[in-house]
Length: 115
Image 1 (spheres, rainbow, N blue to C red):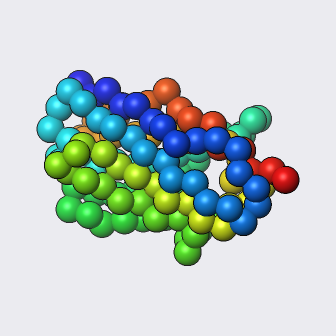
Image 2: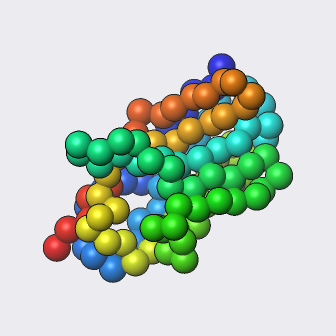
């Protein structure tokens, strides 16, 4: 069992930056693949970025070059640095932990990009 708590969302102007953080507890964090997903109103939840237990990263095309995912296996955290934010990045962002068939989600944090 893994518990995930996100933080760092908020309101930012277009072109601005935010850093999301997710803290995990309850299991061996380093063995999990971690990811960030987002869901905009009326839309399906979509993948933003993932990072495997060995540090391999993957990004949605829409965020490549603007977002960076990282993890700290000592602090049991995964972060998403978001730069050059656009209004279409507005969504609830969710942290995910995945190992084999087990998948865990945080409660989500709202990111709003608006002038």
